[in-house]
Image (cartoon, rainbow, N blue to C red; front, side, top):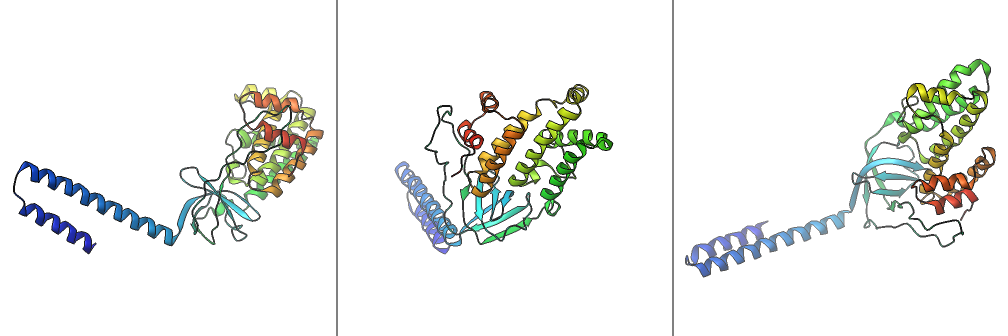
Length: 305
C-alpha cells in the first residue's frame, strides 16, 4: 500500500511540474491510465496468490449424501462431490462451507462405449465435480431433517400394508393421495418434502410407491379417476411417472455412487417383473422429450460395471 501511495505522489508531482499544453496533457493522461492498469493487475495478482495459498472455499447446500460422501450445490447450481466418512451427521438441506486445498476440476460426463441397436446417443447427466476437503463446516444445520429418510420410508411402508387391510380402507386411500402429492405435487409427509430425502431413500420410496399404485388399481378400481376429477390433479398414469422418476434418479446417482447404482439396477429387475414394466413403456417415456435413453436401457437390462 505504501508503494502505491509513493507512485501516486510521483504522478501528482509530475502533473504539477508539466506545462499546460495539449501534448503534455495527452502524455499525462496516457501515463495515468498506465499507472492505474499496473495498480489493478498487481492487486489482482496478489489476490489470486492469496487465494491459492489459503485454498478455495465452497459455500453451498447439501443436496444428497451417501455412506461416504456428500453432494454440495452452490448458488450457481454447480454440484460438488466431497468424499468423507465424517459428514454423515450433516442433514440434507444444511448450508456448509468446505475448504478445498487443490484447484476445483472441470469434470464432464464420460461417454459410455457400448451401445445396442435400440439405444440412441444421448447426453448424460452432468457429473458433480469431485473435490477433497478435510474441513467441512456447517454454517446452518437443518436439524429437523436428521430423520427424514427413516420417517418417510416408514410412512410409505405403512400405507402399502394398509391397502390390503379392509379395516384400513379409508386410511389407505388417504395415504395414496398423500404419497402422490408428495412425489409429484410438492406435498409433505411428516413435515418433510421430497428434496429433504437422500437419493437412496428416494429410490426406495419410489419402489414402494409402485407397489401402492398397483394395489390401488387392484383393490379400488376406478378410485384414481374419481379423485382426479374431484381434485383437479392427475392421479391416473402414476405408474409411468414413478418409473420415469426412478430412472432419472438412478441415472444421476450412477455418476458418483456405484454401490447405490448397482442396487438400484438390481431392484429395478424385481420391479420390472412384478409390475410388468416393458422396454416399450420406457421408450414411450423417452419419446416425450426425455433424455438419457441409453442409460435407461442399462438400468432396464440390469447391466452393471
